[in-house]
Structures are given as C-alpha cells and as structure tokens.
Length: 307
Image (cartoon, rainbow, N blue to C red):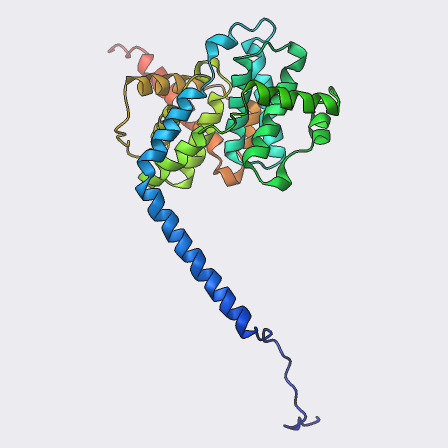
C-alpha cells in the first residue's frame, strides 16, 4: 500500500469561500437594521393597536354586503350560490392562494351583487373577476391566476375580453375600494391574543368557509364571524371557553345559526379540509356532530317502563 507523503497529501476543500470583509460588514449591518426595524414595528403595533382595530371595525361596517339588496336580483337566486362558491373554492385551492384571498373574493362578489343587476349567464364571470381582483390585491404575484387558466376552468364559456371587461366593471362599481378586513384577519388577531393552537385555527377557518355558502351570513361582520367560529371550534375540540369582552346577544345568535349550518357542509369544502395540513378538521367536525346527534336521540327516547 502506498504511503501518503506529508508534503504530497492534499485534503479536499469543503470550506466556504472566504467573504470579503466589506461584504461581511454590509451583511451584519443589514441584519442589525432588520432587527431594529422589526422591533420598531412591534412597538408601533402595540402603540397603535387600538387605532388599527377601530379602523378595521369602521371598514367592516362600510364595506359589508347587504343580503337584502341581493334578494332583489331577478335572475340570481340563492340556490345558485353554493355552486359558485364551490367553483371559487376549487379555483382558490388550485392556485394555492392565501386564505384571506378567498374571503375577499366572496366579499367583492357580494358587494357587486348588492349594487348591480347580474344576469344568470354572467354570475360565474363575476365570481372569476372577484377572485382575480382579490388575488392581485393581496396574494403572491406568481400565484395570481391567468385569464386563460380561469377560462379553462369555466370550460371556455367566456373569452379573454369578457374577463377583462368584467374585472374593470367590478372595480368601477365598487369605486376601487378593494381592501376589506376579512374574517381571517380577525382570526389572527384573536388567536394571537388567546394563544390558540393550529388545530383551533384550521377548524375555525373551515367553519367560516362553510358560512360563505349561506345567505344568513352574507351581512355578518367578519369580527363577529371570527369570534363565533373560534368559540365553536374550541367547543368541538373540547377546549375551555374564552370570554370575549365584545361578546353580546348578536354573537350568540350568529353562533347558534352557525352551529346549525355545520351539519351539511359542501362536499368540495369537506374534501379540502380532510387533508393532513388542515389537521383533518372536516372529519373531526363530522364525528363530533354524529356524537351530538346520538346523544340527542338517546335523550329523546322515553325511559323503559319497569317490569
């Protein structure tokens, strides 16, 4: 076996290339700036939290859709709504858009239908335009759906020009007032305050999306929906109830109505929340509701008479 000579032995160099001192100094300075900026942002958020919340509550009052006005539509009927929401949910999931994009898209759809007459053949087109606007407003640029992709999902029912025209018409009708504090925003605020876990968050999101299918919740404030859905989520998961200072009789009414809407969720939505990264909360909710039905049946049965 050949012996290695010390002066001929060369080790493989796995070390990182030496950084230029100036570049290293720039990197350190940048990291310090980011740390300082993050701390200042946190301090500002604490200082202005009350003002931020007041602004959010004002916006949700001003930009809330009116279900009574949608009632006046001649061709659009409420039985059509679940089919359109299913389509929007599937498109939202296909493009991996942010949760708030879904809620914002439905808000834009309902606000438009509160202001304009919508023909039956254009209902899906309005939904697509609302999703496009919501994605462009708050989502990642590389995830915003292309018109051709949405048109394929619509089976080529519309042409590209119709999508563009409807998008502009929705924006002009709403006076370009796009931003809206969705239920997801209030979820995050309340979850951070009460230190809820991810499972509570996922189940509350599932419950809030179930509400999108129903006329009864079109004019419900997102902050109220967030409190009611989180309260139901904690109850289903067997967690202690949290006393909210803003809780009132209106919240109790929404929570009761929401609990009654959970028994027949959309199959599309149920499949979405059966996935592992959503903690399979659709199955958890289904099993919980089945247990409640069984308990109610046993309570309703008359006692066995003594022999």
